[in-house]
Image (cartoon, rainbow, N blue to C red; front, side, top):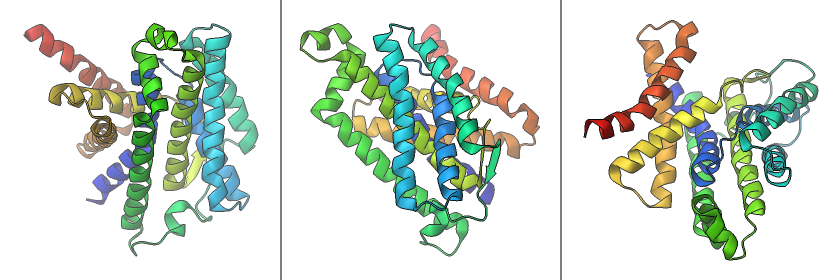
Length: 288
């Protein structure tokens, strides 16, 4: 049971990443590869500040700002220099590898002997249960904030920019600024996911972000499939399903390991699972 609780906690921690991918890919239709670098950046900033005994109330804002700056840089390169969004993300992600390595000064930073979010707040005597309640409260607040933002006039303008850029531009909205802000928000959320995961697993590694975009993409595709099946139009329910997608994704991978599949094949299983959930809706349409 503890094995699946771990998967659930990881799913909750990855929900911020899934929300970031949801904003960049589903709202703005931008395939943002900055994710791999900004996820690690969030973990690196967290680890460096914790090991330098910085107060907990400063760490999360620093992570959000760092991730936001990475996303904004991608947005500026894409909108102002007119470089393809995919290439802009790859360039920033590549640069962030050096930035992350320079900030850490080493390829790995352990956090086992330092206070983290999950042991500073004591809700339950059991460590796993305590982590569950802390991360659950964190994710609920996060979804509430993003849901509120997307329902405001600014959030509606963001969504309209992705749906019909020419139309919203004719109404006087600066679409370049919207894209920069949207990518900054998406990568800030991705960095928050790195903030949670680094503290949960007790270390930060320079390579922890490699391929992480597939986790967020898989979570969003699961959510999109459920949204289409149930014909959901509510922003709040869509965000909840993104969280559900992240949890389902981690539970499926945990089930795979529990069935005895070699851990070395986990990335292959991940790729296969994402391919399956991408293909299912198209296969159903073709059958009809």
